[in-house]
Image 1 (cartoon, rainbow, N blue to C red):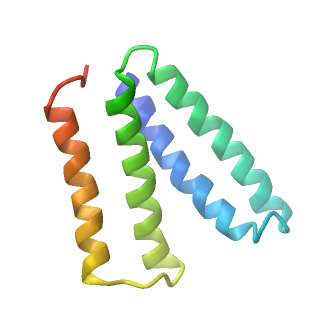
Image 2: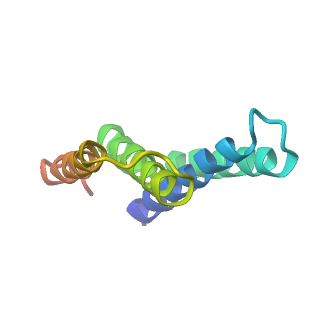
Length: 107
């Protein structure tokens, strides 16, 4: 159950980052409210998951989901630059998260 919370929290982190972008410096009310709601929900779920998971591995998974998801959606939906180097970097992030889980601490 804790890992489901981490994954959900990571997906909410993606929504949080995209809302932050769409808030245009908190000048747009609905994306700004979305940012706050997604942030509270994401951190709340991560907090619950950390009751049973190791902080380093859980945090890495959470950040990895957020970073990879945000970067991928930025490229796919927001016109962020796409390059082979960026794709390789994202694959390395995913690889690092998987290796942390394989190294232990993934209850």
